[in-house]
Length: 118
Image (cartoon, rainbow, N blue to C red; front, side, top):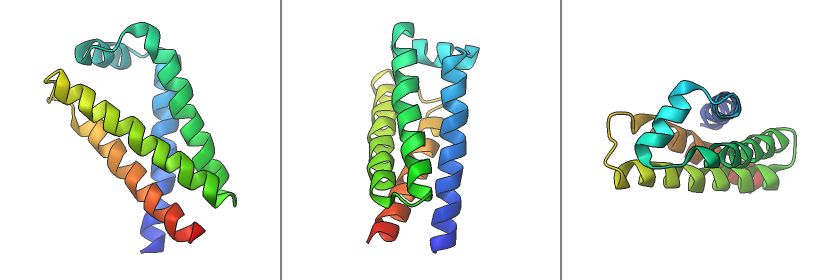
């Protein structure tokens, strides 16, 4: 079980790092998705910073700072609960699987760090 959670945590790091890069370069899919759910384009850099901090915390957790990793994972869970809520509020369901998938990865990372710190 620990290996599966570790793999999901590494997947969470990679997926979120890719998403941070997409936000920083203002990839078309990021801008379009944000507009669909009612997030102003001016928020995208701030969301990238928040998500990037989560990635950094997960990486630090993988290198021994388990409590920081746990805090970062919980932060990403909250971030993606907000993303899923934004999709639901805006009734944008055609791509809700993406924030939902990121939420599942963040939940797995939370479980991994809870186990590692425990």
